[in-house]
Image (cartoon, rainbow, N blue to C red; front, side, top):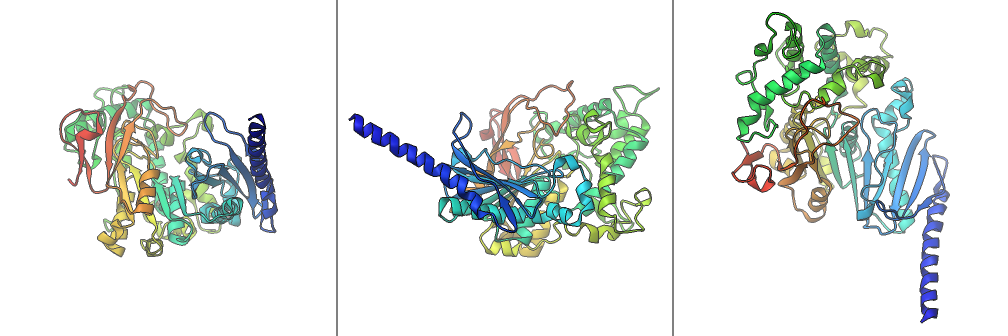
Length: 498
């Protein structure tokens, strides 16, 4: 008996050594275009199973990371990062479920800030090429390591990561079988001028932390109840019109105070909430819907922060914009008109932007696109996602679009995550079931987890912490409808088209 146990132990020892050896030998995939480090075998811990970790660089600049679990489920998940990229995204969370994972910094480091826009190649790597090239190399590494083909490849990302995800579907439709695109930054051509206009209004009459609290309380008190449930969330902000939420009623009488708004602050709020239209009346930028104003998105983007040297995020958009436009000698940020000058920036933004509604190549390959968008997303206002869906439906047909593209709107969610709504949801399983079994998602269960600290939002600490509750997320245009019963339970709600 002892001999058998020794032999079993030796067998397991050799298996471990074999995994470590294969991992280390991934360095042999190095060539003229990519430098791949020897893989490192990472033992299991409480959070993560044993896996091979391999890092490398493509074209001297595009850093990437691949993780290969000991027990592989034949699937691959790539994480596209948000913001200005410059960091490696998540390559760990799905290892316990058997996914091989990968991510890239897209070709620059976050310490550079926006200086990478000075380099044409680095700019294009950030715009789209970095994710595509890292995808190609990562998939080759996965298949080489396991000596087997990937059955299904998936991509997830939010904000800039959502933009990268959309560009993969549009420009490289063969890279992925299924894509999760959260709050995608569809068009720099729209976002940048809007941010500049809002910043200019804010400079004239700044909205303070107290002002955001006044707006939050007023919008919530005016519109939270419109869906029949008082839960701190405006279920459909489109219904929160001036008939319910009148900014003029918030005006200070007899001098500025912390519980009211000055005339200038009301005008700034109108700019943020309001639509931007051109001289012919065409909508060029939607406004921010009412709700969750003091929950952290408005403050993070619009108010000055010590960690940013006393600047705000939108105050730095001009620097980025100037670098993108550096080849135009006539460009002057100070005289740039955010409404009338958009046509002149189209060419400079072309590499970044999702410029087509035709996703037929992705759909014809069996690809599935699941998009989610918060109703209270400050920088990437939700109407943009709805407009893109409607554009695809007009281009490809409503029924045909529904076969491969579904949008889930998230009441009370800020930019990508957080907020007073039920924002925490599992989008991976519904996408996998849709792509692999044909089970198209009709609703996705979501929860409000309670207080969660996040680096990208700055909530007013005076606001009450949200209590946990459940809600279904519905395929747009359907919304969660309260049917009676426990208001905190998802089962008390059905998905209905208003």
